Every structure is written in structure tokens, then in C-alpha cells.
Length: 166
Image (cartoon, rainbow, N blue to C red; front, side, top):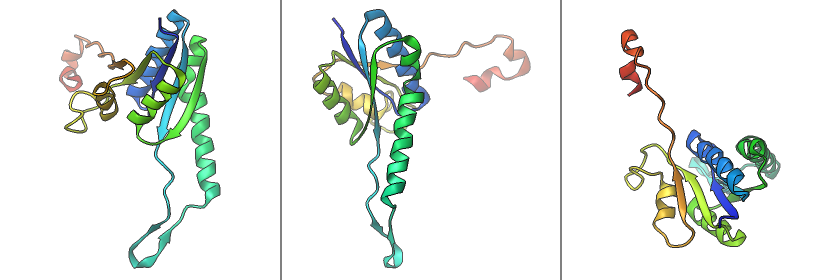
């Protein structure tokens, strides 16, 4: 029985579709959801050309992280809140596949849910790099949620826009 679901989102359309799908599933199963957003690590000081050091003050890093935490809670988690499911949000740093696997192990999740991505790497020809990496390792089962195809309006051929949608 599925009691805990980990869902990963990067905030993209694909990621948010996976969150919405997970909200529906969790609502039907009475499962708890752990929403995970993996952010890139804060940039360390970097020496630039001419010996200058690019530095981001800690208060700026903290403000940015707080805003992202709020976005995870209010925007990324909105479908879960709307569905009335029990959930928690986590903002973590690291490699998304590794972080999602670690969180799933930590919370005892029975499944990990992620969205698909656009064609952007050879390794992720049909799946995004995160979903591809998750499905290549043993462990918790992974559900990859594709975007629903938009219906094609047959009348759009008259306006010459149908082929643009393909």
C-alpha cells in the first residue's frame, strides 16, 4: 500500500504537472506527500578575469533562499493544498536524482513521482535527465508523468494554425 509519495519538481510545466497528478493520486489513496525542490547550491566566490572576485553577500543568499522556500510552499505546493492532502515541502541542494532517492529512503516512501522534460540531452532523449537517472537505479519505484497532449481543433485547419500546433 502506498502511504508516502515523494514528488520532485523544478517548477516547470512538466514538474508542476507531476505535482498535480500526485495530488490526485494522494487524495485517492490517503497518502502523505513530500514535495522536493532541488536548488542549485549557492555560488562560492569565483575569481574572474583580472583577479576580481565575484562575491554574493550572505544576506542576499539568505533572502533568495527564503523567497524560494516561500515559492515551494505557496506555488509549487498549491495543487497539494487544493487537493487537501497532507504534505510537506523541502528545499534541498545537490544532484536531483540523488536527493530524491535520499529523501525517499529517509521518509520510507513507496514511490517517487517526477515529470518528463523537453528533449534537451542525448541521455534524456525521451525522458529528462532526472527521470532518466531515477529509472536506471534500483530502489523505490518511479512514476514518470507525461504532459497531456492538447486536443487538436479540427476547425483550426481553416485558419492555417493546425500545423503550427504539431
